[in-house]
Image (cartoon, rainbow, N blue to C red; front, side, top):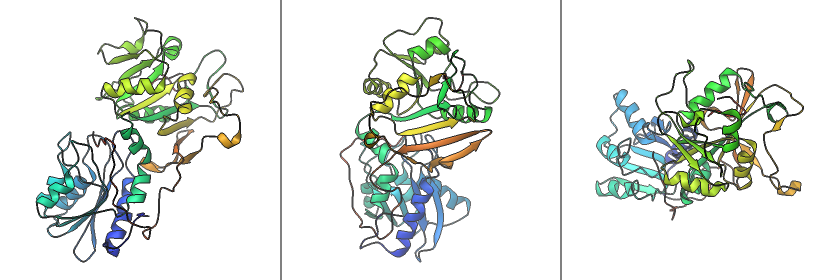
Amino acid sequence: MSGGGGAGFGAAEVAAMDSALAAAVRGPRGANPLVGAVVIAADGTPLVTGYHRGAGTAHAEADAIAQAQAAGLDLSGTTMVVTLEPCNHRGRTGPCAQAIIDAGVADVVYAVDDPHDPAAGGAATLRAAGVRVRSGLGAVAALELNRRWFDAVAARRPFVTLHIAQTLDSRIAADDGTSQWISCPESLADNHALRGRIDAILVGTQTVLVDNPRLTARNPDGELSGKQPLRAVMGLRGIPEGAAVNGHDGNVLHLPTRDPREALDLLFAAGARHLMVEGGSRILSAFLAAGLVDELIVYLAPTLLGSGTPALEDLGITTLADARHWEWDPAAGGAVRLLGRDLRLQLRPAGSTAATGTATDTATNTSFDSTQHRTGADTAAGGN
């Protein structure tokens, strides 16, 4: 599974990297990469396993160290195996490199480098403190695990989650325009939880005019959650003065374009690193046709309409050979989940390699020229 187990790495380290990669998948995709960390004793015995649970939470290394401290374990002389170079900056959490040094870890093995200027340099900091540092173990699998995240960061755009709530026959509204509620309460609650951890949520001007959504993150009792996404409306028409999306906090942005890439540039400039696209059909199709969707979440209701608004418009595909292929994504709880009466499907664009490799794959010491960032909605289909 580690996708890298060449000379210089012991069997215990290879096994630890496999465990770190498996742990990383438990976290959610988004503005941050999926990262896992395992600490092993001098004799190779695994002691603790940590992973990153999302923006604002402890990084995988810090999570593992906190678990060790809670268990009264002394990490002096141990080895930490982690799927990404430990960060070297202080954001919403402290620098992992310093936490590793303070914990007394003697040896760090990581899969791939993190050259983002604020976060990079963790390996150098560790070496300067006398910690032995090696890289490349599990590089192939670590790259594949976060393939679309690396793509988004290299392109200096937000990581894009596209959300569709639809019937079995792929309708997001009936012929008369009614769409509330296609999704069941459990799906709506799950969607609002996702809204609470993204940076921005986007719909088109037509959705604003027809459905008048609020695009807020709300608790099950209907109250606003503590963290609210930037509400973005994409289209050449302006946002109507009385539209609910305007809210009362000024946290709304009009994107005067029909070009998905231009919209992403504007959102990136506004500080958004994780965007959820919610609709309508034209907007969903535009992002998919442009190849700018990194994660697809579909809430599938056991309902048939037979007619009505389709979830997607023409993607410009005229032959099966040109079809866009997706793969089931096990991150953050699984690719397929039953929520109430609905199915929640989670997918990512298919890649050229599998998400899991074997520990006998050739190890590589991989670096990137990209600018990496390790930081840190209501629709016609799902409600407002």
